[in-house]
Image (cartoon, rainbow, N blue to C red; front, side, top):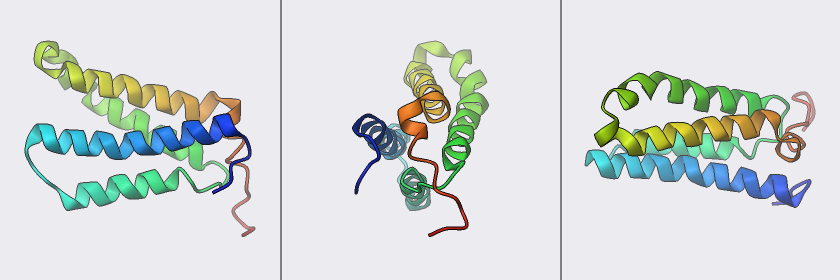
Length: 115
C-alpha cells in the first residue's frame, strides 16, 4: 500500500490497529467473544484505507460519538472504569487527528465519482 506521505500513512495504520485492538481488549475485559463486534471493528479499520473524500470525517464522527455515548458511565465510577476513560480519550484524539492533521487529511482527497 502506498501512502501520499509517510507521517499520515503511519498515523492511519496506527489508528486502524487501535480500533481492532480496542475491540479485542473490550472483549477480553468483558469475557464475551462477539464475532459480529470483531467483524464490525475490522470493517471500520478497513475504512481507514478508503482514500475517498470525507471518509475521515465519517470515521472521526463515529469515534467521537462512541466516546461521547460512553463518557457518562465511564466517569460515574472512575475507580473501576479508568481504562474505558482512557479509551474514550484515545477515541477523541483519533477523531481530532482525522479531522485536523494535514498529513492524515491529505490521504482522503479522492473523489467518489472516480475509481
